[in-house]
Image (cartoon, rainbow, N blue to C red; front, side, top):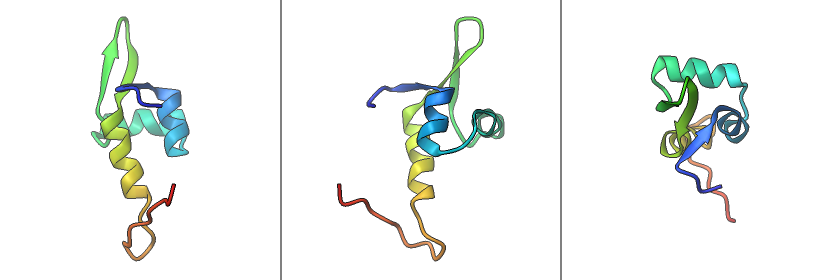
Length: 68
């Protein structure tokens, strides 16, 4: 999935969190988003990827790399 903008449900799936967590993180400024049309929210892929990067660190702060 190499789209520049993601739907809320797509971002939730990538981050393994609920849609409501995505909305909360947008409100808190943790994720960058934009509204399209009459209120459909889209998240910037780069913002989602930044959270994925943070979530890949283990409890000691050591970054975990996928070999794929």
